[in-house]
Image 1 (tube, rainbow, N blue to C red):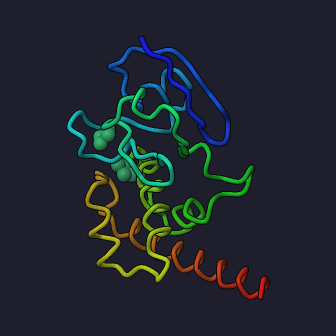
Image 2 (cartoon, protein in one colour; image 1 turned 60 degrees about the horizontal axis):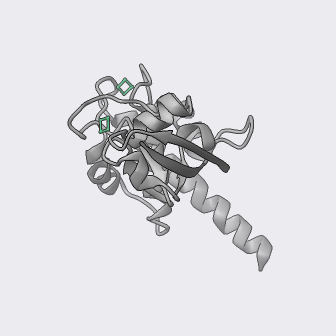
Length: 166
Ligand code: FES
Ligand code: FES
């Protein structure tokens, strides 16, 4: 057993867990954050993506003890109270989901993708960068549309804020 101490969605949490516990299981079973899903046992599906120190990570590929000391954001930490994050709002607006099983991982991957492309995104880049996330329902088209729309909305928002600050 090892002690694990993390900041998750802005709150300090700690617990004791077996050394072999994966981060995804620690989040789901110890912290009750079941928005992060497990869709495979081969690290292929991306349903388990969370942010670890600001980068999208498949939480089934990391031990909880390896993540100790990190800052984690899960799908539960993305909205601002009742106000959806722009990526969540875009998935809703553009019907970027059907059953919703892949959606938390898609949204966490998309927010990281948008953050790391401040110059903006095009369809080919979105499709290439989504290759670690599998959706069995949508055919991806509306997911791509939603990510492109969110990227545009967020870049307008940041330009607006930059103008206000100038
Ligand atoms: S559960 Fe499928 S990649 Fe992590
Ligand atoms: S919406 Fe069902 S797996 Fe993507």
